[in-house]
Each structure stands twice: as structure tokens, then as C-alpha cells.
Length: 395
Image (tube, rainbow, N blue to C red; front, top):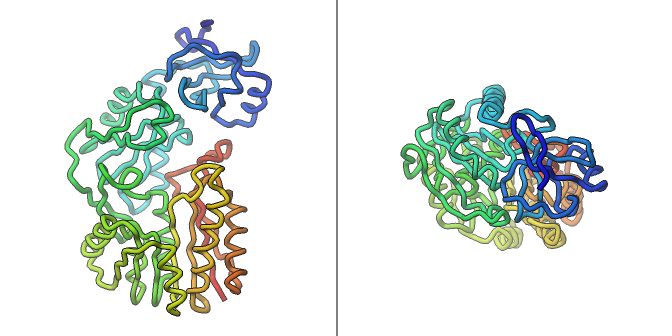
């Protein structure tokens, strides 16, 4: 393997094809294997100098296992060392200090958007949950953990290495606390709401932090009878309940519903109804039973995890939104979400339009929203712009 000078040390050189160079010019930080010249004999996680012909393009992490062969780290030839990562961590911390308000649970590092390809770190009231999703970040973890410890002094640091995407990189699945002591549950605050987070077993790293601002926005529309479908541990419902007569939570997981009950007690709320049911079946039965609601929240899991899933996903999104429009009172509000990257915002809007038309309802689009500000998206990385949240009023 050819070696070239990269920053203060020699790096293996990887070259892009003409097609790869055109792709790189879009600014996308990933390069796919088909866009490399030859088959580099490099270990996964290696830092490489990337070229197109003799033109230096930057430094990138290499993966031997994934279809994504390169993840760019920097366009320059600077040294990628401890000082490099510390500067990026300081920038990420400073940004969160600017944008996070009235909450002690938030995303601290969001992968490429913060200059840490393949790394996620979430903060929960002084405890950290970290996910390394690339072999290079796995190799750098001791250094990253030391920096997190130095700058944040967390009560604990837990590796949530149970995300299935790690298997695409040939990495094992595991969950372990590597610094400090993690209690069974961590109590966090989200504006006026208190929540329990399970950093070992909860979805994602404990909570759906990307919806934090959308939950608080939805609370402004709460009144009367409210329905929260795919409720998980009740985070939306807890924000809605103080302004509602009753909130009905629908969730298929008994464990999630049990946590939602505990969260309701934690917040002193007694106007929540907990229903363990398949969401599709509940909505169908509610329509048949003539039920009506003033506000409905739909926050389903990703229906389209790959492009192959798109037809079934669009059918599923249309069905739940059509049922929701049928269940809304005149003037009722629908907060409907999609976290499927493989469905664009324009496509999601069209699905919701079709759902309203089939339900014979006119709907006014009040607001279009995305992930909370601690999840900044890169325009050059559409995959980071995955969350769509629409707020609509039905006639």
C-alpha cells in the first residue's frame, strides 16, 4: 500500500474514481466502495489520505466490512490527534450550551454533524451513553472517553453498543458501563416534565431525545380528549396531560407502558389512560366505535428502514394518518411524525395529503418541524435529516 505524508505522520493513500470524485464534490462525507480505485488492503478503522489522481481531498476513516468504505474526518492535512478531537468536543459542548434550554437530557455528539464520524454521545442528567458505530471510533474510544471524563466529569459512562448497525461494520453487540456507577434509572427533566431513563435497555440510548422540542411544541395544542399513539414511555403524553381532560396512551410494549405509568406518578398526573394494543388495530376499532379526539399524536417507529421497505411504509403511514383524520373532531389537531430517512419530507407530506383526502377532511398545515437543535443535520448528509414532524388542523 502506497504511503503519503498526512499531517504529522505517514498515512496509507486511497484514491477515488472519477465518479467518486464527482460524488465527493457534492460534499457528502461518505464514499462508497464502488467509488474507490482498486481494493485497499487496509484494516477497518484505518485513517487514510484520500486522493483523486494527484489531488489531495482530505483524510478519512476506512471500513473493510461496510458498503460505506470511507467516512471523511477532515479536508485538510492536519494531525488527527488528541488535540484535534478535543477541539471538536469543545465545539460540540459550546453548541449545546447555546441551544439546549430547560433540559438535562440531550445529544452531546451527533456523529458527522459534530465532526465525529460514527460516534454518538448522549447526556442524561450527568450520565453519558456512548455509541461507537465505526471501527475507527471503536479504536479511539479510550481517548474519547478520557476527553469526556476530563471535560464533563460524568457520574458514569455507558457504552450502548447494541445498535444493529454495528454488525454491518463487523463490530460486536454489547452494553457495559466503563466509568463510574450507573443507577438502574436516571431521572431527567424536559421543561416542566420529569422522566425516567433506562440507559442500559431503553430505546436508542434511553429516550427519544430528538423529539424533545416537538413534545413541548405539541403541548401548546393540547385540550380536551387527547390520543397518543405509539406512546412508548409516555414522553409526549406527559407534556400534553396538564392541558387535557384525558390522554389515552396506546403502546404495544407492556414494559414501556409500565414505565409510562411510573412517569405519570413521578409528575403527579392522574388523567392518563394506558392501553396496551397494536396501534393499527386500535385506530381501526376507535373509528368503528365512533370515538373522537381534540388532539392526536402519531409517533411511529421507522416504517422504511431500507428503500425496499418504501411501498409498505407509505401504505402504513397513509393508513394510520387516515384513521387519525377520521378520529379528529372539527378543529382538531394532528401531530404526525416519520423518522424514516428513506421517505423524504415531500413524500411524507403527500402521504398525509392523501390520507386527509381519503378521510374527506381538509387539513391546514400549521408547522413543519424536524429533530431538536441538539441533533443538527448536515445538508450534505441527507441521512442526518431523517425526522419529520407535521402539525395540522382538520376542518
